[in-house]
Length: 83
Image (cartoon, rainbow, N blue to C red):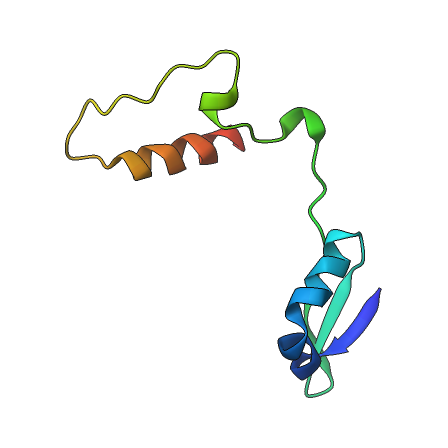
């Protein structure tokens, strides 16, 4: 676990997030107290999100109700995958 001051995190966020992506856990300290911990999510490869248009069971999203936006349908589809 790596401990960094908030100001250091703010100044070097990109490189610190690269470390998180590589498996490091960060503790962010502000005014002497830990205010956040950042770690990479534990992904289950079998549950990894694959957009519908890349899946073998592809069924295109069809906008049946004009009052619903296509972008909202896409977000709902993505979110339902993780439920």
